Amino acid sequence: MGSVVVSPVRLKDGARLYSVLHPAGPAVRGRPPVTVVLLHGWTLDNRLWRQQIADLPARLGAPVQLLAFDLRGHGRSSATHGADATLEQLADDLAEVLEQLVPRGPIVLAGHSLGGMAIMEYAHRHAATFERRVVGIVLVATSAEGSSRTSYGLSPRLARVMRVLEVQGAGLLARSGAWRPHRRLMPLLAPGVRWLVFGHRVDTSWVALTASMVGNAPLCAIGGFRPSVDLHHRVETLAAMRGLPVAVLVGSLDRLTPPACAETIARELPDAELVVCDDAGHMLPIERPDAVTGAIVSVIRRAARRRGSAAARRDRDPVERAHEVSA
Image (cartoon, rainbow, N blue to C red):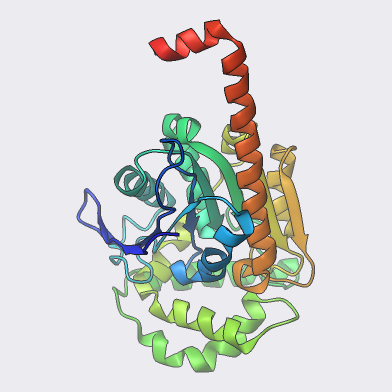
């Protein structure tokens, strides 16, 4: 893999997104390699994917380019300003990042939680580009139904109360600006983080990394994106992914996007690979890094076979080849 390129992407509205690109090296036979774009979850940042970034090239055994960036309002990217803390904005941001950093070549999109929702929104808002460039999808601990199935590990009645309190608290945080006063409190909040987003087996380093990422998220992003997540409903949009290699992963103990969320996605995408990670929670890229990396590798390989079969068919069909040349 080539040298890492850290490139703050300036968007049309002036926002800057902290991006890390891991080039694959020279193109093979003039064709750019597949680029895996990694989108993290709510209140997290690109460090979520560090194990996948470290392991993917060797596991795949073929050239691959990796791009991870901090979503708007997260990590080292620009803070949100109220109205732009939406999934629609994240989808448009993704379109601009791809246009600037990955203008050519096939793309595999991998999204965790909020990142997975942003992928669905991108497929909805940028349908033509999605169809033309995206060759595979990996959806990790995410939902096409917003937070409607979020249980927090509680009874249905208590979960409804918790959801109301969360939404009300989010409204207050959304108006609190880019402050991060909770950063110093994260050691005290670590037990709650551990309970909420992890399964039974937890390493202290996992909790420390997650607490660090949450501590980096400004209050305006923590609260600002909550309404958009609540309103997210893109079950019908999943139809745009049919025919593509897709992997859907969920932890059996996920309290935020429980297995029912993954089952809904899998029903809409009957050819998708559904992976349920036993005893794991919401943070699968950290809790089950091998499973997540393996799913990405599987999607890339399936996409390569699919593209190879399509190329072979074109080679056998002179009429189709002639149409392609004239297009």
